[in-house]
Length: 93
Image (cartoon, rainbow, N blue to C red; front, side, top):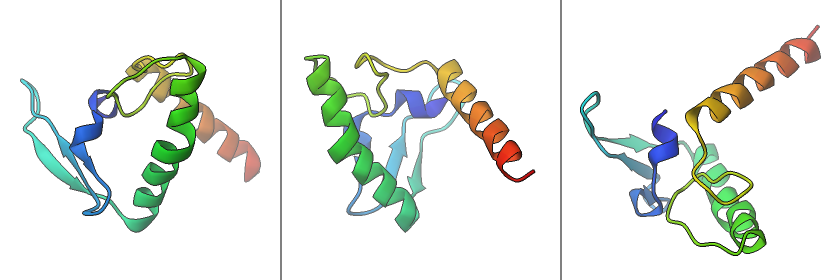
């Protein structure tokens, strides 16, 4: 999952863009964020991420971190999305 590979220098909130680095399977590209996505990124970068780094006494240029301040694995994100979908199905029943 590409989101686990994003580094801070690839994010430009003022322009609302994220540059995705290409690899063997995918070409590099630039994603344009919607205003609500920019706000979510801003909140994470300025409120949540600093707490993770401070709690774990670590530094990292990786965008999304685990609670331990390390790179998060794609499988974890998939699990979080699937659990969220499951909770939403139960909510709307």
